[in-house]
Image (spheres, each protein chain N blue to C red):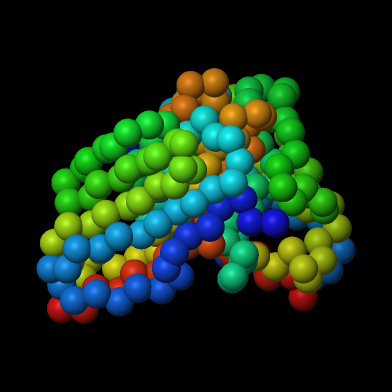
Length: 114
Length: 109
């Protein structure tokens, strides 16, 4: 089944403890991206990747890192999480960034930083 | 700064009503997406438009590039259409996406 898989679904952590949220797609998509969703602000793009080893900042990249070593995986890393990073996170992929194609979203990761 | 504005924010309709959700944007775009998010959080892509009109079942999406405006219409609405509908645009310069804050639709039986 074609899908974008995020893990974990729920994560509670403490300020400063490094964490990684994984994202994997099995559709051979070139474009992958991370978003956070906050009440009243909607979805905002954190980082995106056009292909392996190519990443770019989105609207709200501060406090986050990403890497794209393989086409299928695009992990989101919080080196030193802070409470303002408490949010609902989504990973998404699409076939080819150069030719507009639909976005496929993961099921989301609800992160709480205390 | 809000690159994408949606209206209304909240909408309650009786089953069977015709529904329209509007999206206006202020940047140059290569495509506009309509997304659906059900309670519980999952997001599904409904349409991707760069011009004209698309139809899928009871859903119709239109876009007017000159006016920088898109509409999502739901004909013969049903309680299962209750969800948050989100408009998203992909910039024509670069590959960033910008999102509206969503329209929360409730369809009452």
